[in-house]
Image 1: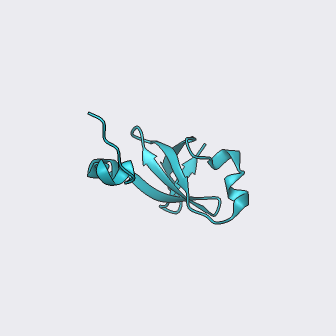
Image 2: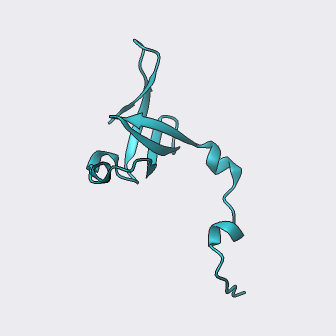
Length: 82
């Protein structure tokens, strides 16, 4: 079946709610990132939530990069470990 339309695929074939439950917003070095859980403590950067062009040039926080989430015991906050 061929389906011709101007409507974006995301509107015709919406993403399942389970995929959105795996996503969260974290802050790394003052930059907010949208990450998605891939394994128990591994996360993949989906999107950079910043308007500063310099943040998009930082190779440590580029989309597709894998990061590990850990809990900081001294302050009780989450943090990113590379």
